[in-house]
Length: 131
Image (tube, rainbow, N blue to C red; front, side, top):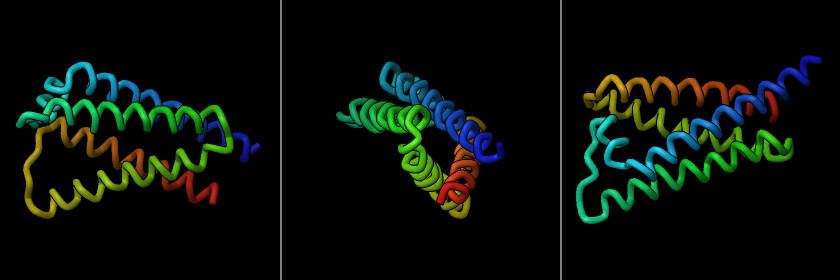
């Protein structure tokens, strides 16, 4: 029973993560200037908006596909969880470096950082249970 609960939780977590990546990816593709403005960032230069759509939008939609695949196919669960742990862990490391350097951020940046930390923690915990 406990193993089935963990498996169900894993699939729900992967599905939830896929949905958040879809939402962020679509927002980044359809309104990259608004998305970055919400974070206090401006997309400058000739290729700024082009890169925002590709990096934030395209990568997020690709991540959503991997997480969704893990939610519906058990053989892809571990790959999806490892991706989330690595991806969110990278954000956590970057945010920690910013904190150490004394960088400032908007409240919305800290909300994203908190979300990333929780997602990293949950994914890492699930990876440890599956390994």
